[in-house]
Image (cartoon, rainbow, N blue to C red; front, side, top):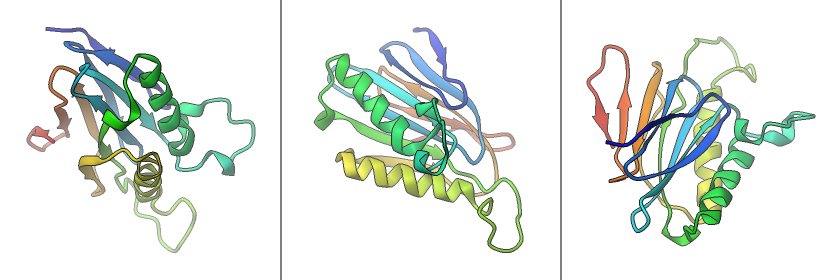
Length: 161
């Protein structure tokens, strides 16, 4: 059994089998898991917002889909994983609050999911599975030994994608 490595909000980390990467409480945030079956190296990013270009002085690149995913790929390439071997699984992007009208606060979860998928597509990384949307938070674990992405939510059965 490996070590469980915690990824905080607006954070990203890499690990190698048999370790497990986990992030707690994905509400409107997205947990992007990247994995390479050859080296058994995985990466997990906890993205809070879709687009870094909308915010000034953002020093935290892990907070945004556009910069966080690119940085996670860069770190995995630095560990010897070619980008062409990476596969992705994503979870989160819940609509945590009912907001009337069309405010920009609206459905940030959906915006995060769309932005994450767009960045992965631009990078040529296939998304094998996703568990996004709805109205509940999720805790996720990426098992680097087999690429399983385990999703836990209060009052729901554990799901592996």
